[in-house]
Image 1 (cartoon, helix red, strand yellow):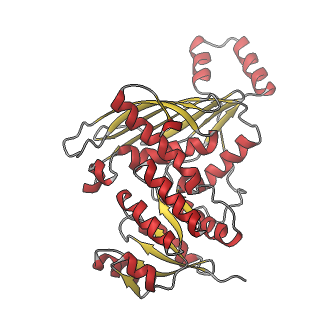
Image 2: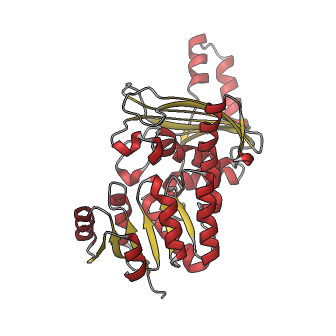
Image 3: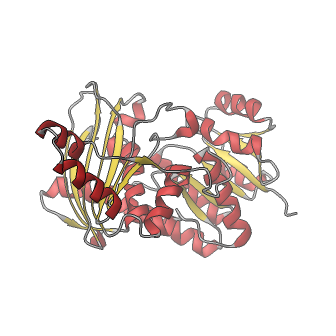
Length: 371
């Protein structure tokens, strides 16, 4: 049996609480041995909950002196690049929260530092590691949806609720904070985006340095799929806070609203699909040829028979996406495999966000290859 991966966690604020369970439940694979935060009371409180004694307020100090093989970076976006590069240069593997970096150059420098030191760099795109995502990915790869032709996602959140989230200079704004999860998921399913046109607005008075709380964008994927994105931080009342849909030649997939937002950190509830088939089309045709009213026919067209993806056999170790992503990180380090959300992969997600921002600034579509 191999030794557990020894990890130092950096940043003991909100998202670190979601990262903690994997260390408590799987110490045979990932052992949390240290934590670091510039606010010492936060670090000390986290250490108590984690059952660790090695507490730091300076990252360089932790990298020099802590008994760690890797870092789990849970700080704000503006710190990701500097901290990831420092850890890589110290020979530590890096799991860094989304968004990977605030600029393309930051991301490229993170990748270069990891490559030079021969360490693993993985971005914590936790939505990729849910059982629902695994089931949909397998279905698409098996050809169940046919040729994907279009997709869409929307993100409507209450907020922002922390001051740094208001500030574009700190990596704030609804695009980098929330929408990045959803465009990353579409990328994971469909492929990279080629071109994007976006519009963004600042509506709420607390937003700083041009941070957006309202935006819309149209994406053209490299394989020809078209998609749209709508995102907002708002006080509006809405029936659901986020969703996505994919339209294929064989059917449709759509997300549902999560029944419990706290469960495993999920952004979505059960995922539904309706697949075209000869049997289903024949049954529908027979019903339409019967003495049914126009209203009944329209209702069936607008409310097709959707099934729920079976997530009982996805091969994931847990129903908790945060646990699954960290165990994937450990497995990749142990086996030498490339993480499915590696830095090399996830710079393409960052480019989508940067492309929306740049297109809004210039008023013209942006080719992501230029970013």
